[in-house]
Image 1 (cartoon, rainbow, N blue to C red):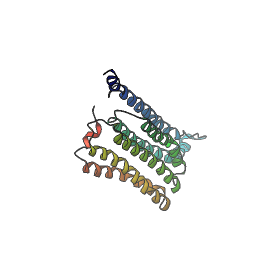
Image 2: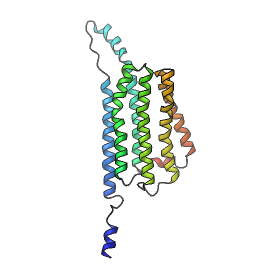
Image 3: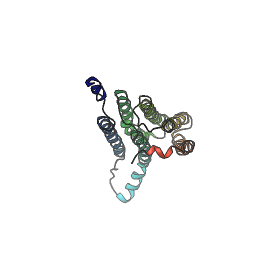
Length: 224
């Protein structure tokens, strides 16, 4: 009897130690996302001009326009990944070592985003640079998908999560990987600008996925 009782208390109860581990990982991930999104802005340098400021400053600011555009695109994309990560962890109740490491590898590429964005701002007209940026985003998508799949198969999710909700999250991440993957040959053949414009397909694709799983789409937000 005593041995049986010991077995029953050997694993953390849901919402206690397991919940604390989830909260710590989510908080750490939020910090990495926030840091990455903040550092993106540092690529926009204040131009130093001399002489007549009224005539010299506007052209210098226009020269910074690619960096502004690169910042806006990268910030919105990272924000898109953060919202998905945040919603996933609202349904994760326990963690294990594999989930932790999958999350760490995903965050590694998130932290690399300012570097990729910096290249885009400086050499954004080169298709190879846009393809590199897309590869970084694909890596984030792949590790996000692996993280969610492992959480689902290892029993780390809330018991109320249904198979359709699991597939919805999976498809939302896969859509990102597909769109960014398709942009690579576009970047290498047509150039960086057409490739980046193709990223707009993410939103209609997400709408289509939401309609396919409209019965569980509201559940992605989890409990308030």
